[in-house]
Length: 115
Image 1 (cartoon, rainbow, N blue to C red):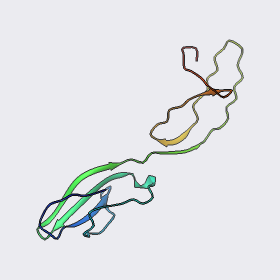
Image 2: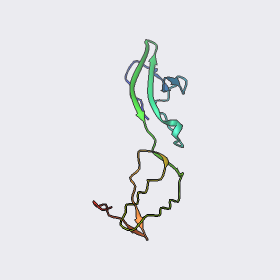
Image 3: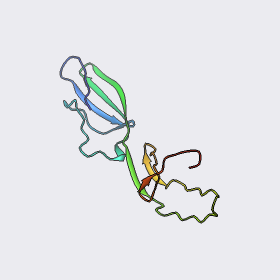
Image 4: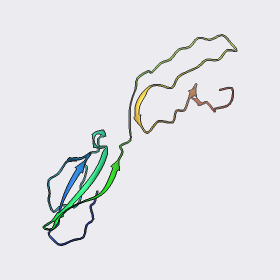
């Protein structure tokens, strides 16, 4: 992330995540996350100061997409011919919400009013 600011030099920058300082004031106006993790999600702010005072810059919300492991792998249902079988989507911790596609014998099931 880059914090652009104009003012009387020297300018110093500090980065804040969810109202907690994550850097000290320094001349570095960029903040780099080298290995993005879910813990990096949140609202980032840049604070700029010079000898005249400090100014809180705009906020940026960072969201991290992730997909956890499937919690339920197998579902077996026994139904009478002609009756409906209801299969639930597998539980998975993720963001954003996943799009689920069902397959039968290796072929994609096309949604219809009977499926």
